[in-house]
Image (cartoon, rainbow, N blue to C red):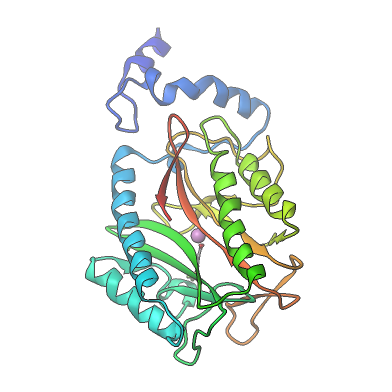
Length: 291
Ligand code: MF3
Ligand code: CO
């Protein structure tokens, strides 16, 4: 009797549907997963319709900022110029660049060139030159809602080897994306990404990965791209996380800049690429919220 009533109540997520026809449909699978001691996202990680709406508005700013960078990035500009573009465009649209002062990060965006794996700090001294491959990683706060995505840019004539690294890394992200569905597992995403990268002879960074996002910049779950399918957190509608593998042309070893404490480099000095999509698990599969 109790259960019947709950199933007929409107779902907590705000969809307007009955619980039994919305998130309640996953109750049995969740109970089973818990019994199997699997990781299951708690209610706090599953976003309501209202929260998703706020996150989509934040993501719209983030996408616009990256589009703006895409239009203006060119040989001869500095990574400091990119930082100013991001700050200007984000604040014009009433957003706040999430990286700025985040755990002491000094700029509005991460810009990582060639052998820089991630967390490159924009500088007026770093001039983009012909042949560079550049990751621009943008994150926005709008009305308290976070969004996060990154893209690669090729400057001028990029070597075939590096161009392929950039294109195939995006393909890896899309292979991961195809695994996102309710009652799938986070490990399915990681394995798909990793299999794709390794099929090209590339390696995937182990120490840094994706993350849940929404009400904070970094929420659970941590998203590794060196996982096995059928492991890790159960995916349920309303869970939002990033797919953002760092794919290295050479070995997977990395190290962090000792002077600035942020910038991560490949151990072997070879280039690294990264694309980041912010993804929502939906009733039927996924929605890319930011790219
Ligand atoms: N945007 C990065 C991510 O994808 C986080 C950068 S933290 C910063 O998770 F402080 F460097 F901005
Ligand atoms: Co991220």
